[in-house]
Image (cartoon, rainbow, N blue to C red; front, side, top):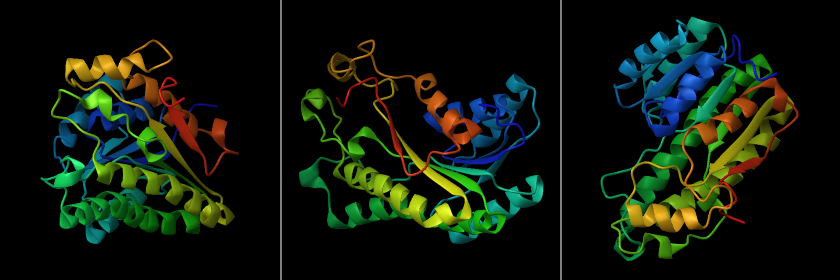
Length: 258
């Protein structure tokens, strides 16, 4: 039931840390994978996935999720190439050059721009893909949220580092969880499922002190996640094994948020 054979899946942010793992896993499970990103390194990633999985049904399309014309080109390409769009994984992480500042240093303009790019981009792409899915009378949408979409930050784990938990991120990810529920309710009549995944911290060479403090609060294994620990949940939600699940936010954090 976890087989994705012949399902066409669009994955945004496909050249990123999670996106790369998602794209490869979907290909391994038999999906037609449309990897999309603003980073053209996605082309190299696609060639690597093809080589490792021995499949030819993985393609790259450059796309900015805030650009309506680029989105329409993406959907047209996927529809013509694979005849349908079975699933969309909203995984992109757009942000401006000032993103990541501490709360007191964030300007109103930067706050609004980052919310518009990330949350607004998820809305725009989902709206356009949903039009195709509504005509098909089926579809599957998965939004990448976060533990910080429903849980308050633990700022002590960022002490003695240059890192923080950006206020924009909390606002965006909280909204994505509620956007998921709205869309599940609205699109359910068209047999379109909408769910969210809220990962905990994924290791990406963060400072040692942060990794240590974060890991101490993880119930399972006292360690940060790697991409493999998130991939399984994605495949489950994309597959027919979850065909009666919609409107849910699946938390994948090893018990960090308990």
